[in-house]
Length: 94
Image 1 (tube, rainbow, N blue to C red):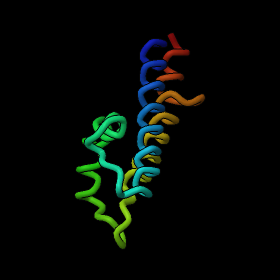
Image 2: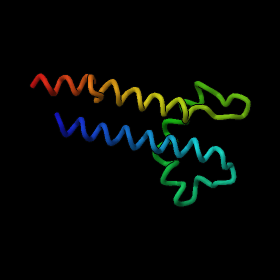
Image 3: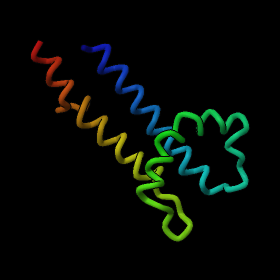
Image 4: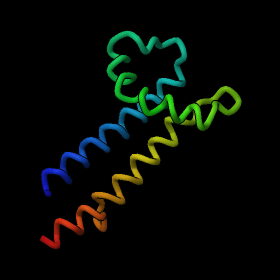
């Protein structure tokens, strides 16, 4: 169970960092996300951003979906493996 907690924590933290990089990259529209090293940021995040953009279209030309997904990743990390998280509490019972 501890391996799952650590792996999930690393995955959610990595996704949070990647979404923060996507927020920063929106400030530079000339950056081509199809070229390295930017492609390393775009590939894992784009599958999450596409459906989110369908639900929440850009407001005034500003894409807020990466901000929303940073919040979701952070919330999931806290709910699942935070100090009082579900998986953390379950691992203490064993």
